[in-house]
Length: 92
Picture (cartoon, rainbow, N blue to C red):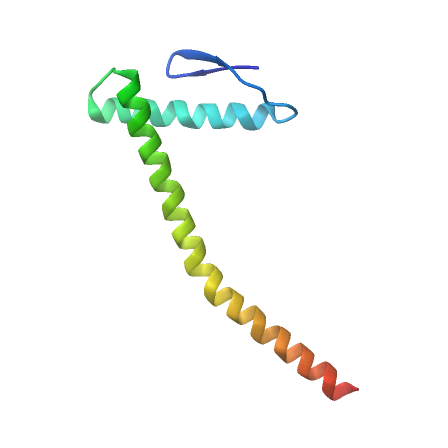
């Protein structure tokens, strides 16, 4: 399939996920345009690198938040499992 990112066309393999790949391409295109406007540059390589840094920052921030949530959540699940196991032992 063909996608357009920052006024360039790319042929990519999408399999059955064409809508998803189009969504990704639109997101990257929007990020590149946002960066180009903020940096006031038209150099597509610089824009691409800066957009990649922005997207990487979003990814790392989300991973950090996920880890902050996962730790306490895992402890709560372990407590719940322990309570259920204890209740099952007492019922036998």
